[in-house]
Length: 119
Image (cartoon, rainbow, N blue to C red; front, side, top):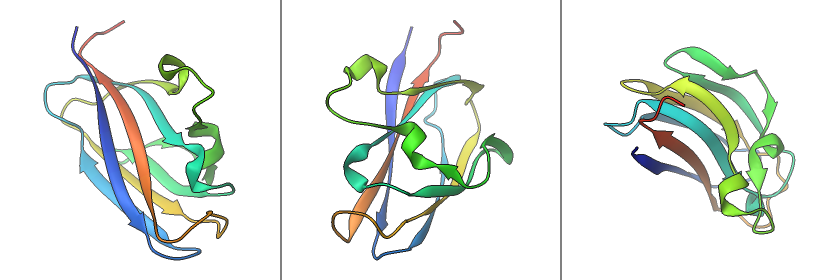
């Protein structure tokens, strides 16, 4: 079984910024099993959209807090569990900054847990 964490990064320059990420999943991994975002970016942020190849994964204006974790959570439990095919697909998201980040600019980091294992 191959497993990998793919990291997608985008700079958020100022309060209330809207940033987009459009990236293909790493080659050689069939399934997306989890999504995580660290809590260090502050509270109140939302995803205007979060899609995999034009199919909605999370609903419009989904609160990023549902996907956030911090260092008090064990590493194997930090991912919001997802079970979807990633092979040959693309992640498309729009992130809306709440204006509540501790510092600007900062990097939005989206961690994707990928595997080739069906279970």
